[in-house]
Image (tube, rainbow, N blue to C red; front, side, top):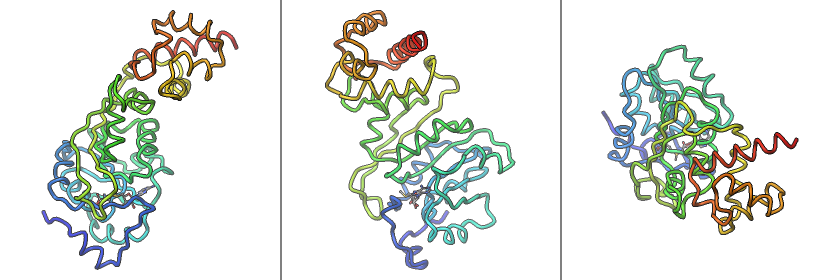
Length: 286
Ligand code: SAM
């Protein structure tokens, strides 16, 4: 398999790098292969690529998957991709991923797949938006193998009692089991980004790992618990729930949470128990 020469392609097609689209093209063949190997793609797999760029990763994905569905926003890259992947099992959608209904796009392919995997070197300016979109809206995706800023990778794979554990960690870990697969230095990109990167694996849960009475309430509730990191659960929640501290203290103890605990000490199970309790309390008092 030929390794695409990104610089040559850019010159040939007079491509200029668009920072506003988070373009950092991957140059390193070993890293590309490592990403693809992490994905365990087979001939029955549908791979969704977000931001194929000049097709460096796409080339490896096409070689292994049944079909590749790729979303690219940048108009100047479309002819390059069309020329490179014509007559292949590639469907290229020229649009903003955040505006698409991914499951509808998968259904339009009219094919059967044993699994659906997102494999992408993400545009970093919208990492969280893409993750939340894929996790919340799609019923079809099984796994995501995605490159992102190392800092974000640390957060979404963080366990409690660590400084990286925050509302995003809990929200994502409610949807998927997350693993930081490997770290990637900035030097392997063109242009090199200002931060190091990492590849993260997100394995979707088929059934939620904890029961949640109302998901919208749960997500808001976690944010409220972490609003001021240094503050106790009691302080953060009394503001968010507009409840006096004496009553709130009793409710927290009822839920087996010490009022002086900080959000970073709570597990997913703790958040689920608390959020369900206050959701029900809210319903009763309505
Ligand atoms: N996959 C290529 C690689 O690894 O060399 C390019 C990765 S680059 C970090 C991110 C890609 O996402 C760029 O090609 C960029 O144009 C594209 N992109 C940025 N925002 C997008 C969006 N909202 N929807 C779809 N693609 C987007």
